[in-house]
Image 1 (cartoon, rainbow, N blue to C red):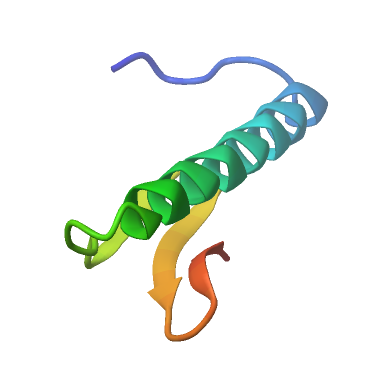
Image 2 (image 1 turned 45 degrees about the vertical axis):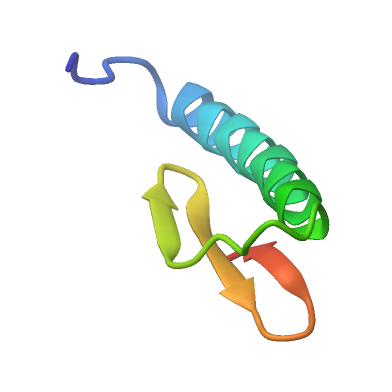
Length: 62
């Protein structure tokens, strides 16, 4: 894995992009759960946030 060598502004922009992508992943996990063939469990730790299953709310990013 390469170390990020850009500016603070570039880093913050990329972290924002990572958070947006995490939100898209949360939507996909909700869609998989809605199929009714079983629910995903656990959490995903990624740059930009943590995806967690919130009871009654589906997947969230924090």
